Image (cartoon, rainbow, N blue to C red; front, side, top):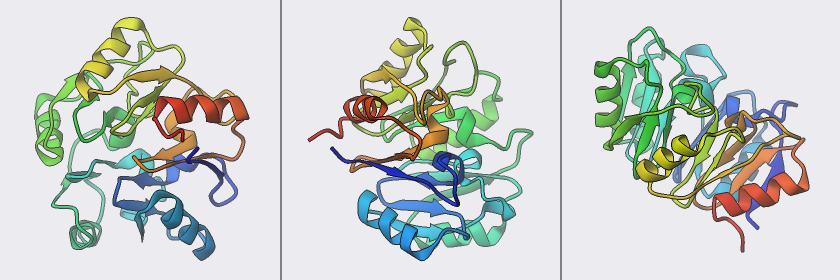
Amino acid sequence: MSIHLMDLMGSPNIGVYCLVTDKVALIPTYVTKSKIQRIEELLGVDVIQMSLGGSILNGVLAVANSTGIVLPGFADSSDEQRLRSVGFSNVIRLSSRETAFGNLVLVNDRGGIHDPELSRSVVKTIADVLDMELVPSLIAGLPYVGAFAVANNKGIIVHPLVKEDEQAVIEDVLKVPASAGTTNGGVPIVKSGMLANDKAALVGSSSTGPELVIIGQALNLVG
């Protein structure tokens, strides 16, 4: 099973600090060299050490797939230029009243859902940059769809209180099955405790054996 326990900077909340695609991982500048090498090896990605606009909350602030990445408006122009240089074909700093795009948008390479309160212009920009359809939806009746789920191109692990109609929308738009689960010993905000792509998942060090099994099955990383 390609599921591995990890912490970063002494915290099991690894999804708050990092953003991962199938090619690249954005990791804060404070992470040790040995930990970076392990992330590269396990996820099969190139690690880019970056703190967006001076913040270490890469996973909260940005949303990305294999096509593009959306950054908050306060990110530096140097952040944008660096991401273009490492292979992101579409990069934008999106100025809006929202900044935590990683918490408000859930995507894989096939589709995505977003907080229904995002403006039409913001949604259109994100959809264009990521080259996909975006559909409004809630998870567990709340708008934090990027925080409450993690998706790859094989499956989705989602907040345990997801409603049946919400799950149906998620599966239809992202075109993969979804399963409910938690991380870090029962935390339902699953994004906070994990990183995942099509190769593997890194899960917060406080996660239990049963949680790892559920995550592996949900993201089709077993075997």
